[in-house]
Image 1 (cartoon, rainbow, N blue to C red):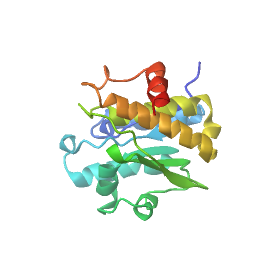
Image 2 (spheres, rainbow, N blue to C red; image 1 turned 90 degrees about the horizontal axis):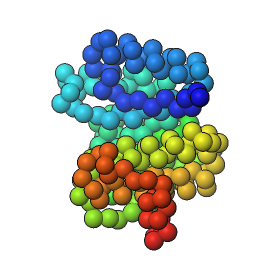
Image 3 (spheres, rainbow, N blue to C red; image 1 turned 180 degrees about the vertical axis):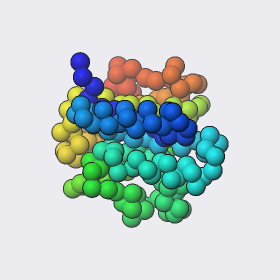
Length: 194
């Protein structure tokens, strides 16, 4: 079975030979027809400097077709303390199909070629936020891998993002990133109660 999505972060860009391997993997995945998905997953202490982090993160920006950034990453990459449409759209590039800005307990914003909007959050008693963004993007990419036309249909995309928001919210209710990831059954049960 061929991979439909190649999802990556920026940590592998910090040092060689990992950086070169990352760039080659992106190239091979694209040639094989995979959708390129990027979550910078900024970890400032791992980089030699913030300037180097921004330079390297942006060095592959225009290759990705889906990009997910957090509100903190949006501020870091744009240098603006405004979390608004104009700031988010300053990161748009022509190859992009979907730009997502996750806002933690405030939900998420989405930007596509012909539409944009927001999806409300789910309020839960958060215990540990580790892995919430990964849970969100994993849920989204799982649905997109099944049917990429979701990216061009706002109504269907909103449903997928609601599901992804639920995954992220549920993940925060337990400790640890991996043990906290919900199953489809857990998410559907959670959504039925909302």
